[in-house]
Each structure stands twice: as structure tokens, then as C-alpha cells.
Image (tube, rainbow, N blue to C red; front, side, top):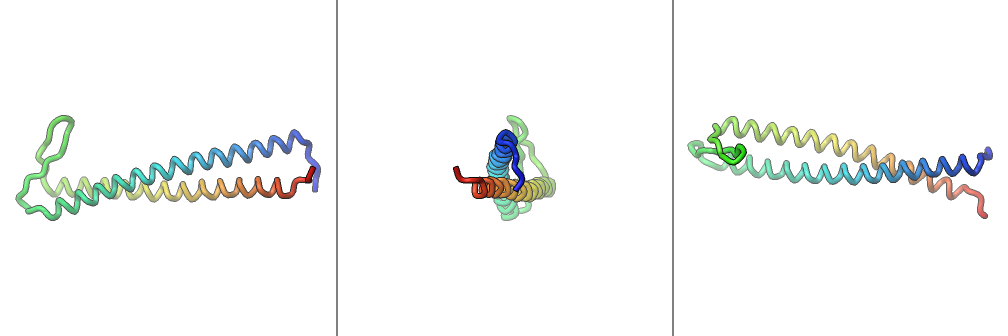
Length: 122
């Protein structure tokens, strides 16, 4: 094994530790965002289901600021389904990001384990 100076090894170790910490933080944030968007999507799905159970002649209203506007049923359903699709896409991209961050964190942890496992005992 090639010998590196203690200072160089310390810098490498610090860099790996920082990568692990940053990956863990980003992973936690990504999971929280995914959970929040999943909750929003579920609320939208419930709203869509509820609208579909209503009679065709029932008036639908949408909140706009401090007032409500009557909205045609078709446009309300299209808007809600569009929002649901957008949230689904966001959730999928956050899940991909989470998998990448989890792999990055696990790699950093593995590198740290290898360093400490193969370091000379003092």
C-alpha cells in the first residue's frame, strides 16, 4: 500500500465525511418533499373521486383569493387531473433523486468503513 502523509489522509477522510453528511441531509429533505407531495396528490385524488360522485347539474366552485368562482365541471376535473399528473411526476423525480443520494451516502459510508478497517492499528 502506498504511503500518504497524515495530512493528506486527514483531508481525504474529512472530504468523505462531508460527502456522507451532505448526502444524508439531502436524502432527508428529498424524502420529506416526497411525503408532502404524496399527501397533496392523495388529497387531489380524493377531491376528484368526490366530484365524480356528484350529479352533473351540481355547481362547482373554486377558491380564488378570498372569493369563490363557479367553474365548469370539465375544466375543474381537467385542472385537478393536471395537478395530479404534475405531482406524480415530481414524486417520481424525487424518488430517483433519493435513490441516487442513498447510493452516494452508502458509498461514502463504505469508504469510511474501508479506511478504518484497513488503517494500521496503533
